[in-house]
Image 1 (cartoon, rainbow, N blue to C red):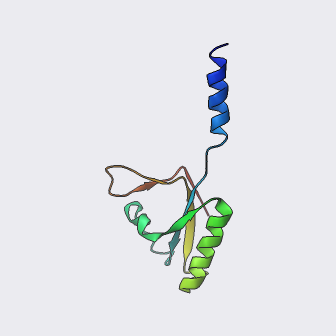
Image 2: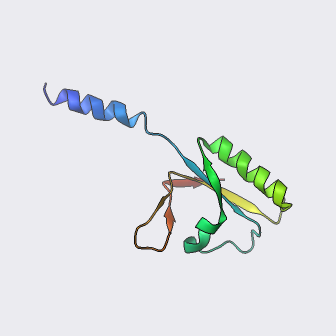
Length: 95
């Protein structure tokens, strides 16, 4: 029984993990950067996927590169991989 309380706490605390989405905009979809260069194309952090998508579309519109030329992606909880020159590792990516 005394082990049940910590287990319940761990399960509940996992339900409140915060999401943070990082937006990336690539002005030339035919020239997507290598993984180590992607951080140069970040446009900010967003609380949810929908906000990230909206931010990416607004950034592309303001750059004048919407449509077939540009592309974007949003990464969930991206972190720099230590010792890899700023390489960003995300839990998942979405468009």
